[in-house]
Image (cartoon, rainbow, N blue to C red; front, side, top):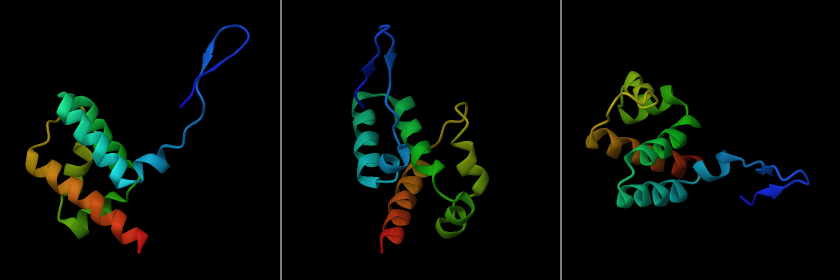
Length: 102
């Protein structure tokens, strides 16, 4: 995203459609892994939440056996998801993206 500078020297950001980037699981997982490698667990969580935000949580819950309340708890920054939940969510995002492509 390239910033634009107006004549009055205020920095403006261009509009960006996050559904294009967060809808692509390869981009989501690459960014997620980069955050983990850098030790930035907050950004890694935000990326997973962003990937989940565009999905139907009820359908995801039924098809991947993840309680719906657990999925919504990921949106709460106070909860700390376990590695098993992170793995299930990553798997669910990948499977749902493959299902929508075919």
